[in-house]
Image (cartoon, rainbow, N blue to C red; front, side, top):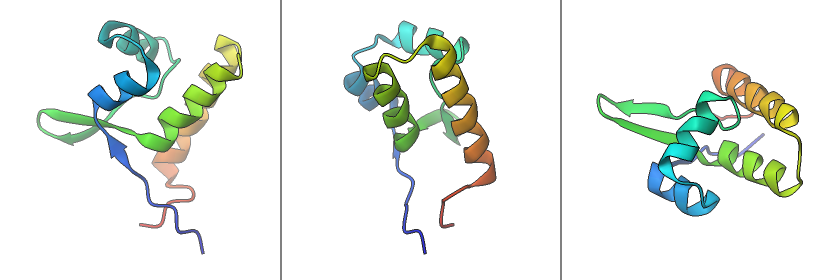
Length: 87
């Protein structure tokens, strides 16, 4: 049985972990190079920590933008399918 528990982090934590500015973060989301946030309520969003870590690792590994876009697509698909998540 998989014991993975998804964690949600807020934008300041993502910015701190990546070193990106807010505008660069949102440009990367728009360009498909970073996973989009999820809604936490009417005026709040958060990011899935494991998705952010996967993209940071891809950046460290110097993957191409096309490879990172593919990774982001896969991560978002897994999010909607709840693969590996014990709900």
